[in-house]
Image (cartoon, rainbow, N blue to C red):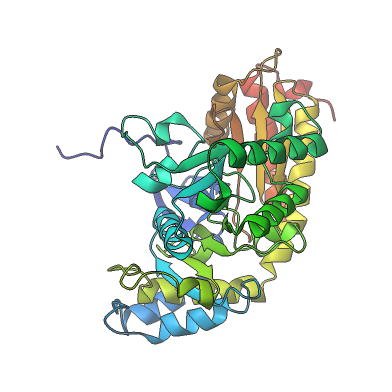
Length: 426
């Protein structure tokens, strides 16, 4: 019998048959509160009526207009609409299908535009599984192992992961920027460095926000050395952190290239890189293209997504609900020594599990994640050691649903740490 590749592993045992808003349902119509959002993809929830209507309408008009052969109205309209939310100056767009493809396109652009071979990424980064993107990913060995030799020209600098470094945030930023300067002095000369790729919030690396002073330090060094600053907002962008773009939490910092995907089209495959027209014009002729990029139905979904985010105030909602989520997670952690740190930004929240000696405790994190699934709350793990449980609900999440998730999470953690639920302190 034909089956899925055994290399694929599922985080939960759920076989979903339908979705509605914040919930998924299985064949027995059991309801699950989905705090994964398809790894941040279903930004407007499952099957939002306005997304469904836009997709159905577009599928009856034009499904595919290959955009190096013909243009279509959805592509042009989306390009105009994204101009309303993109940082000033990033006025040129190239569309693809996935985050990895967009990273590869940004890498290609950076090398061609600067004539320099090297890029710098940061410890704990995840930029994708394709060959170039995998070489740029350090969030876990599973993204890199068994496929070498990897693409050369990638240097890794420290990320200010204050908890893991055992430092204050200020000290961690200073440490990371000194480390970056050391890389520029010893591994990748500024004159040979095309770009620095940074996630404003580490995703697979453990849901660690980049402090504003760190991003400002990157911007200053990029300007000083003529290096491009590339913001990988594949998971953190499109309103998730309570700002439309996660880098906007660092006032005055604007990247040269911005990468977006995941929440862009509420579940349809669509990604993009944005840059200034001047920078984008330095891409070599014929270097940008693709069969499915800018698909008409995906563009229609993205336009409807922008409408929903605007009309329902979802960026502000992510900020408000994110604070409630963080407060509730910290309350649970206060009574659970196994949770050593709670952090995040907006609706990206992570709980890091450690043993008493401070070492990563992936086993307890995974028990808590599985216990939550058994209770009807879907979560994912992340982190280099798999010891962080992450929550990234759709931007439509309500205060009531945050409360529901926190109640289930407290019970799951109690189960995972062998602490009776009725022994919890109020």
